[in-house]
Image (cartoon, rainbow, N blue to C red; front, side):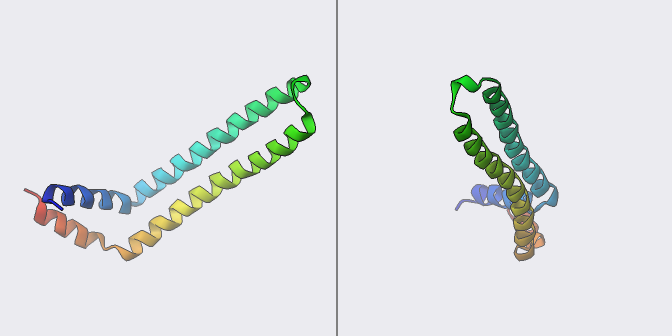
Amino acid sequence: MTEAEERKLLKQILEALDEATVRRWSWQAFALNAVSFATLTVIAMWLFQNPHLLDIPRVVSLLGAVFAGALIGAVSTWALLCKNGAAVRKYIDSEKVRARLAELEP
């Protein structure tokens, strides 16, 4: 690994260790899942307004499963990212990473 590659990697590690970055990633993942949930809601509303297009009982059961999956995905993704951020910060010493990065800086 070249020094430039190592510097880039160390900067990325420091960014990942930053609690604000972890929170931002968590909220972005949560927002992405929430948007998919909202999209599914719009589709469901449209299907219920046009019942002649599809078999409603099958659609309702399918949408129930998809809604539950989207909601569980949103919450679990947010929780997982928060938990993993804390675990990573526990095992990686950011001061050592900063010291090594300072050694590599031209």
